[in-house]
Image (tube, rainbow, N blue to C red; front, side):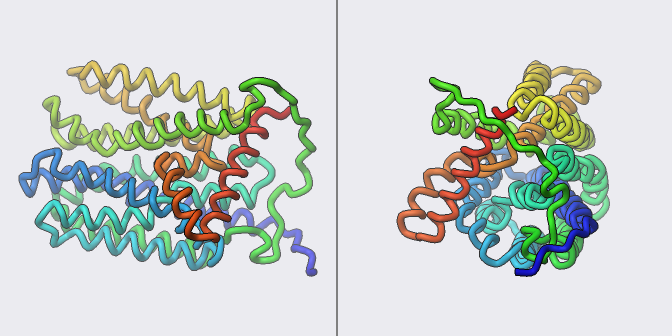
Length: 381
């Protein structure tokens, strides 16, 4: 067997690809959805609840297919799968321009959900394969790319909507994201170093870890996984999904869509800051303590927003704190937490599909075992 090349240049190409893909797909396409949907509601005269099922349907479609789609990635490789994912999601997003009835968006949500359900999962997994050294910092940096592009793009998206209308804006977003993500998928990202006869950065440099034997719940790995599932479900699904409603929240308390766009941008600023901090802190004190610190800050931001402050400065400050919720996903972005961040219902679907589809069951078991190992690693010294 040919020995992998020792060159460490390729991992940095992977990092660049991760920054581009995460920034475009999550930062622009996903985070821009809230502004576009808000503009659609105002333009079509829909009630706020008419398109609310859009987000739920997209989430459930992603949860129902996440193991199958992730299995395709492992079988096909990152290049083929990310190309398919980009083309399908961007086409579906741009196709909403002629829609007139709410059910049109519901069907669209199914397609986008299927091909974006594991969007937050794949790039961090790739980074984890390629960087054994400085893993937390590099993962935090890549995850922060979505926040940086989201913060920069939210006001741009708002201007596009005002100048060109939401229909053209949807097409423009689809073309922009498609170009950036296809370049990354075709020329930069690869799933594992072995796929291209390379070595991971820092391979062989990490010292061995000594396991701590614990009893009771502290040593119950399966029980800890349940707690992890519930915790990440609450942050990754319930709290993160609230970001989509921030523009509507701003208009409901008497502010215009521009204030909602600024709040979304500041949430992305908190996203960026939190992920850099989460990565650095996680390397030092471990992911569990880092996650608790981030959750405390998120709780403070939520408490301020719940009071419906009448001054913009409080809204903006609370939005920045609330944006730290994304860092929780960055801290727990390995193993089973990735599935839970899409929806805890994925575990139920996982079991159903696993009985009918042996390949799905294999991927599912690998994911669960990886999550359990992650729990163990978080308690090593």
